[in-house]
Image (tube, rainbow, N blue to C red):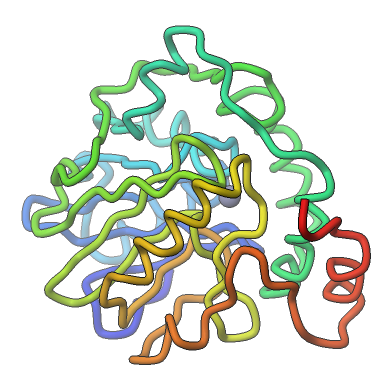
Length: 268
Ligand SMILES: [Zn+2]
């Protein structure tokens, strides 16, 4: 577990999968306890900070892809923590089938995989989680627990005093971000990832028009700290000026960047 800049926030990650622990006034809140091992790491990290698992106020998720909700059962096995999901999930649980993107979108995303050192057990874990929880693998949203509530536009997420929920669909229809205006901090989930020290509005999308609207809306927010679902946190006044759009092909000479540029079927 590592502190994020000088914020009351810590990051756990395995490979490119981030879980953030925000130290709220009433206790810690975990954002995107994605893969089981990452959730376990977050619990261990909390113990080092002097918090036991019962002190967690809430688990909140930026969307319900498997890699963002897969670790929730590990925490619920140990403590009855309330779980809050994006508002759109209510209709997913009523039977709406979430829209998913295809393989070519995964190809575009490839260079993000090199943001952290590759870790084979994490890839295996991702494959397992994809079969049993969330959506992406299964056609419908599958959850082995009952959410305590849903988060909609402009509401304060449970336990996150001073934060706002911001709907940012495009990557998925249920994508939300959490924004702390006083410190200009954005927990972006997968609406924005990072690549080579720059923000990248996610080139994996189910709806390019929604992605364009969400990008424009997020760029209108002052953001000096970007904490993405995948990749390295960024700090500075130039995060948006330097950011790649969701339609921008990645730069760089690495194999994954070249694959992304050549095989990603850009423009579709
Ligand atoms: Zn993700």
